[in-house]
Length: 216
Image (cartoon, rainbow, N blue to C red; front, side, top):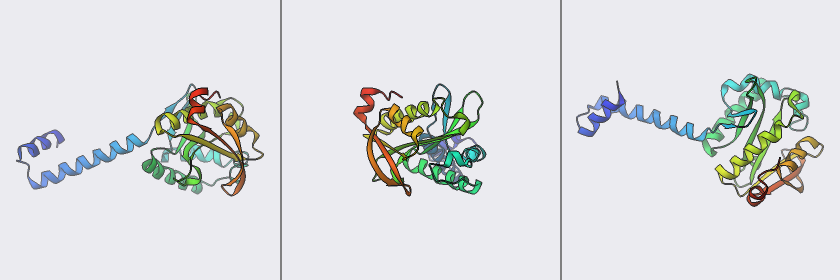
């Protein structure tokens, strides 16, 4: 049954009750789909496509997160498949609520998930500043991919989300992530406790971004 025909009947006032219910259900479904589409922003860079987490990313994300070296400075332990599935569920809710959260990094050349990154509220608390985060599969380290993704996510945070500032935190021994933060134009702020560990905190303002355009 075509929605356009039902709409015409509704406008003329000749639509029957059961057909009106069908129309309302169809319009509700379209509204839900449109809302989800608006909130799920795909970003692209020269080598990457950043896709909001979805269920089809489970195996690829878990392949990254179960590597002890990848997780060494994040949680300190490999992630189980169940952990990854739960994370995807949480992230999908945050996309719906905030309009931003975690993306999977998909390499354009191979279409493989090689990492992930996020714009989120620090500590998951909406009273806190926006945070940028990332992680990469071990075989993709030291190729400039983290900086490439970070630049695009930072642009999204300032230019689309409209954030006034952006912060990042990393384990004090995670020199690689700290370098990416510095290349992005962030300045060291000090040591603070986040995510159950003492972290190095970096930050930048909108004016920092606009003047330097994130020279990562």
